[in-house]
Image 1 (cartoon, one colour):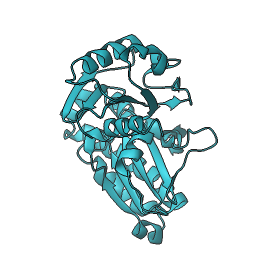
Image 2 (cartoon, helix red, strand yellow):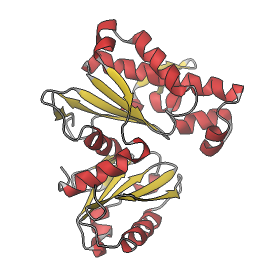
Image 3 (cartoon, helix red, strand yellow):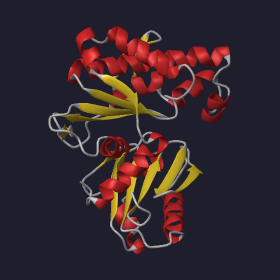
Image 4 (spheres, helix red, strand yellow):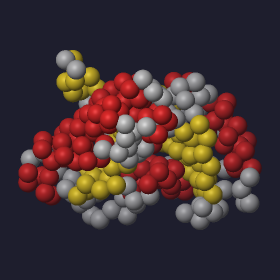
Amino acid sequence: MTARESVGVDLGGTKLLLACGARVERLATGPAFTPAALEAALRAFVRDQPERPEALGIAVPGLVDASGCVVACDVLPALVGWSAPQALRDLACPVTVTNDLTAALAEEFANPESGLTAGVVLVGTAVGAAFLVEGVPLRGATGWAGELGYLPLTGEGSVQRLDLLAGGAALAARCGVSPAELAARAEEPELQAVICEGGRALGLGLAAVINLLNPAHLAVGGGTFLLPGYEAAARSAAQAYSLPELWEACTLKRVAAGELVVAYGAARIALQGGK
């Protein structure tokens, strides 16, 4: 991405990350974050660019319909019903809205080899995924495939979705701290036990993906995945519960662009006209 190509936006449950080339800005979000606050941040960021961007790509942690309207967003409920292309018409550049994992997949596997089966899994406030199957993005009947966070697992004597066992918001709540405190105090023994438990739960989700799709590559990232002990616990559980032959065929790695993978992918998709 060059500086004037496109603005990429990664909207998450705890942070808003805006990127245009080497320029990156971070702002805090949270469950009460509103479309008005987002629009103000976007307008200010675009206004501060040396040149008007060719396009604006926004990635959100939820379901987005074909028109760019947010249909569902658990971590930012005020966004439901928001249509960026309508709200940001005054920016005078094409605006694209996509799911955050769709954006991450577009960046991580920008030029996939023919027939590649691979995926991206991000663990932040919650858990999400997106996949290529034999070189083609797996969209599903309505374009919403990849909701790995809703995978049902047995935990604490009941069936719970993976988000509530492995996502950062759930782990922080279990520890009685904020997500920021969880990161700052992650090496404390009591918190480590919860973090590693979350990592093991993610590993079960990864094993399910490996056993179902037989991917050659799984790229994993997100702030929760980087907590001390989490990645090691996830890898151990994924290997333990994957068929050995399928595990050996899969390279499990961190996303190449780190925390910028979603923003860069959103920018890439915007430049391609939303495709």
